[in-house]
Length: 100
Image 1 (spheres, helix red, strand yellow):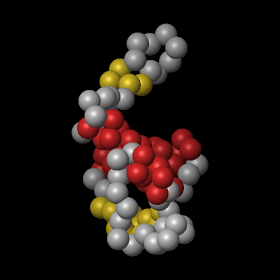
Image 2 (cartoon, one colour):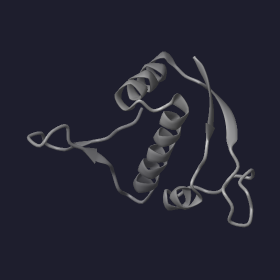
Image 3 (cartoon, helix red, strand yellow):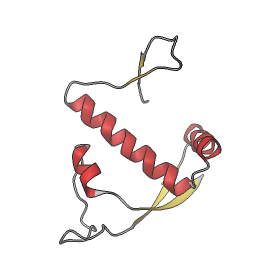
């Protein structure tokens, strides 16, 4: 499934997640330009996107943007020797997040 997305990226969030500014971001401190990309999703990723949209009510564009921001934070933490953990409910032990 191909999904087209327009997403605004907060430069401070991206830099804080270990990211770098892209060449099509506005210079001089203004809002970054919108970057249009085409995304080809595997069936597994397409199902995950549908699940996120169903759970949150977000548009696909917003869900993809949030997922990219979360992935950048996880990668930045791992690059510095850290990890991300999730706990399903208050009685469960935390489990380390692995993204395949």
